[in-house]
Length: 349
Image (cartoon, rainbow, N blue to C red):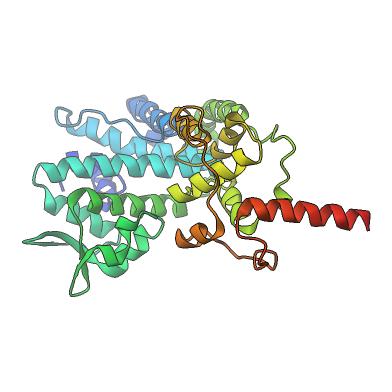
């Protein structure tokens, strides 16, 4: 692959080969003044991830080969910073940001007729992509592996076109699957162990970014959740809440259900916002807009949490317990009130 492509997708094996060919090494990246731009760009990659869940692009077409090398090395330096900080929220946020950048850049390449490049990138992400007269296709096993967490009905296998075990996907959807593939890879690779001398070299950059990370997290601390008692939540809401607090992305139906449920229990929009702040793709303004729409502050329509049958339909009814099976319990709010009543009765006994 050419150096522009390798700089655009620095996780490719060819990027390491190019760095070796040009004599780049770890010591130079960490210490040499010639690589200060790579270190600066590496810090910016992590800050971009933290601030906007994306990594900004720089112009590579007009750059010379050494400038493209610096872009590749900045990716290596960013990964070392993330590993030195070793924070789950930052790691997932960084993995998401790099994969969002991948999606955007692959989409641009496809629009320019670069199917072969997209196929090469896909194969390095363990997706066996092929080009057909109809368009790009991948084995249905790869499709299922990397699209499982996309909960929209449009992404169900029954709603795709399958030919001899291969799934046809329009360009944007194909790139979206590859986004998930890279995100999964980075999430599994990071953080990695750093030798003491490397950790010491990266520490100043890591410390500065850690301070901004802690400032961001402190704005959305889990304190102040009022009188709502999570122990009384039905299993579905406990699972959705736990996934949110563990930095996992919820499907749209899950976000709607949890938001409306918490609002119905009396939590404010700001308190609900605290919970979603741990999500790796958290966007304060967008999330608050969605919350205020569901709570009726901006839409004029106050939504109620879905009933149990609807939760089952959307695949977000998790591990129902004995109380869920009671004929009196057909709604998460009914579960909450019923369990609160049983708790009070047990305390009196």
